[in-house]
Structure formats: structure tokens, C-alpha cells
Length: 333
Image (cartoon, rainbow, N blue to C red; front, side, top):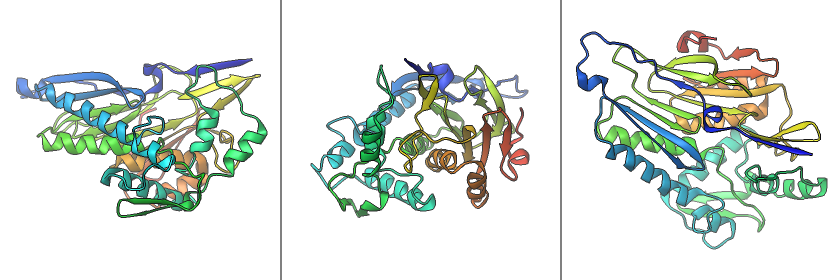
């Protein structure tokens, strides 16, 4: 018997708590808040601006999301990724080339644990299906044999594959990349305080006020509300967790974070990994990478990077932080 669990928007997303208080001396314009939500990038996205009144800025953000979705979707037959995978094209846009390069960099950093050629496996498991099920061992082995990020190369805007069966899936890095592009757009329009929430990829521009940070909650795995919160300004908070998309079959839970080495969902003691840092793209890739590496190797990786922090939640619901995270982020749990 298969029991599917794809959490509702409120459970999938990292809980974002913006605790507005009365700020003495603030003008009415500083207290103004506008917010809109839309379904883009296969998730519910919410963009909230503070001290702004022009809603067309948010509309332009959602249009930009749709632009990138049209470029990067692996299932849209008109997207550049789909056409690359079917070998219809080799020349791509600057953005697609840039993102593939970033994905390949993380493949090298993680010794292949982060692999943008995961598409044969992700398509096989198909966690977005209404009736997902565990594939056969034979099919898993066949799909796994097609994974190799070193089979992909990018020169300028030309993407090359060293074999005919390599296919790309940028899902583990694309939302973070898009969030960074949204930040560029918002800043160019004069926005100084905002939260961009792309289904759990949370990017903060500025803070609640000049002297007050945003408070971002970390989702309680398989539960409601937050298990912890962080205080951030001009940072992103991105979480990868087993609870985000999964199904149960014969009493066993199968989640969507696939291990390229085994072909199955990664098995370790982690429920989620949250990465906090300046680049949402990096945080997105690192959250998946650290989940795949496990707590100790993931901790070592993050502590080798300046300005990035991690929060690991284990299956006994204990929280572990990388060095400096507690003081830098004022973590409350």
C-alpha cells in the first residue's frame, strides 16, 4: 500500500515570521507593507515589500519567475533544459549557462553527491505523481548508471555532453538562483526591505527596520510551526528536508532527496538541513549537498566557507549548529 504525503503550502515552506512592532519615530511610509502570492516554479511564492506601495513591482517579480521557469523547467517542452536533454539545442541563454556552471561547481565540491545529471533518477521516482511508487531495482540501477556530472561541459553559451543519455535537472539549485535574480530586480527598483519566499527558499532584503532584523522560522519537520528561528538581515535561509515531499509504501517512508550513489532516497539521521548565507543560490545547493553528505561532512564543508551557517535537525529532533551560527544568527529554539 502506498500513502503519499506532499505537504500543504503552510507546511512545506519554511515558516516566515515577520514580527512587526510599533516603531517609535517611524513615518507611515516605513510601516507600509504590501504582499502578494502566486503559484510559480511549482510552488506557492510570496513576495512582501515594506515601505512600498507600488504593487506592480511584485507583479514584475512574478513575471521574472515565469521567465526563468520557461528557461529551466525539465518538463516544459519549450524550455532550454528540456531541449538540451532531448539534444534539440546546444546553445543556451546566459542565465542557463551560468546556472549549469554553478551546478557543476557544486558537483566538484561535493565529489558528485550534488549532481545536476540526476534527471534519470528524479524522473523515475516521480515524486510529483498522484500515485508514486518505488521503482524496480533494475530500473533504479539503469537510471543510476546514467548519472555523471563530469559528462557535462559549458563553454561560453554552448553546453556539451560526452554521451547521449545524460540529462539535466536543476531543481536543487534553480529556486535559489531565481531568488537572487529577484533581489537584483527589487534592489534596482529601489526596494530596501523585503522578503522573497519561493516555497521555503527565503531571501531577506534589509531588515524589518534600520535597527531590527527579520525573524525567520525553521519548519518543525513533519509538524506545524517552527522548531527554531534565526535573526537575519540581507541573508537567505534555505532548507532541504525529508518532510517536504515523500510517500509511504509498505510502512517505509521514501523522500525526494535522492542519493546518486544508491539511486534511492538518502538514508542518514537527518530530517532537515537549513543553510543561511548571502547567496540564495549557494544556500539552495548547499542545503541539498549537506543533507547528502551527512551532518559531520556537511558541518566541515560549511565551516570551510566564510559567511555561511548550517542548522541540522536529526531524526530525534535535536538541533546542531555550525561554528559561529548561534552568535551570528541569535538562534532561538
